[in-house]
Image (cartoon, rainbow, N blue to C red):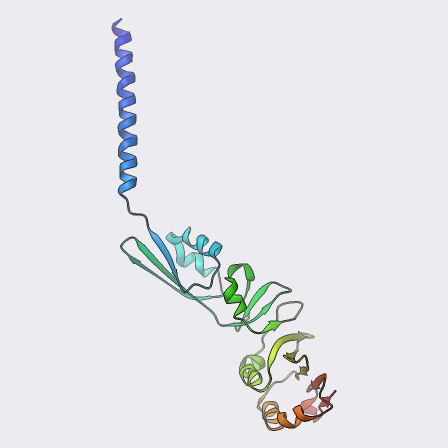
Amino acid sequence: MKSSIKDVLIYFVSILSLIYFIYFSVNSLNKKPIDIINFINSNIHENFELDITNNLDNINKYLDEYAFIESHLLKKENNKIYIQIKLKKSFAINHITKEVIFYDNTTAPLTYFKQNYLDSINLIDNSRSSIRINNHLNEHYASLSSLFDVKQIEYVEDRRYNLILSDGRIVMLPKVIDSKLLYFIKNNIDLINKSTNYRQFLDLRNFHHKTIRLK
């Protein structure tokens, strides 16, 4: 009989201890502030933001794996965490490879970015493989885009570029894009545009051999 009473007491003590433990655990969790995470002016997709949120403890190491991110800033105020991510400068978007191409030739899948950011990239890369931006194009593309209304670009034969203009005409660039080429275009662009022969393309591939073609 005594043994039975002892067993019952042990049972009730165990139950009470368990209830006590659960109560204080729940109470402690309720009192612990929940961090609110805000991404500032973010161009990255919500799913990628969630991945970053799940890796806050090693965020520096985690984001280092994504070469298209130029820098990031994490700031904590009370129970709020602010994250600001700066992307590298984008060059073009390729819908064939489903990638964004950045000026340093870094690429990243479209799924990493919000749609409004993708819509803001005006240049379309039509290359079968994402374009490679050589030093000539990197240095002179801004000047070219000021002379032509470029909407699309294509990397041809792994050595030169075609510019597709908003009216569908094509400018075939030579392998070497330099100040001589730009000077020629700048001083002759009005004459070229007025030419009745310039309906399909402007062939500058042999410009450095003193030859151009209009069709």
